[in-house]
Length: 142
Image: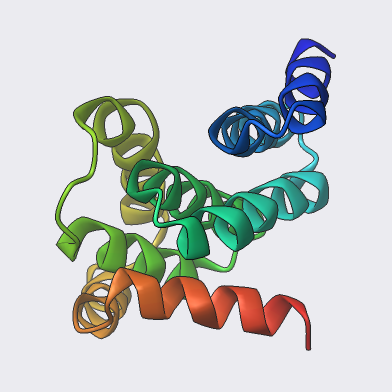
């Protein structure tokens, strides 16, 4: 409830970064509560706003969140591909790497065969993060 209230307050005063961060926080909360569809909506909102505004930290936040959503939905290879793109982009904040990226990746590594994991990691490594995000956004509106 607090994340939603804060997000709405930031949005009401036109504070872009606060609104975007609010969506991300609510997305991770929803994911933790088992609401992957709601989390997907929040992380897409993060990406749809952060990418054109060039708010790189929030692009990382939203992309890692979407990777976590894909993992929660057992879409393991797409999750690893996206997280690989995240890993190969420069500028990921260390706290995102520690608290969000590594746990999601570790879960996927445990679930997948080594061959499947490596193939998905390799597939994502050649995709620029911005391109991966644009594909996610366009796919959500198809």
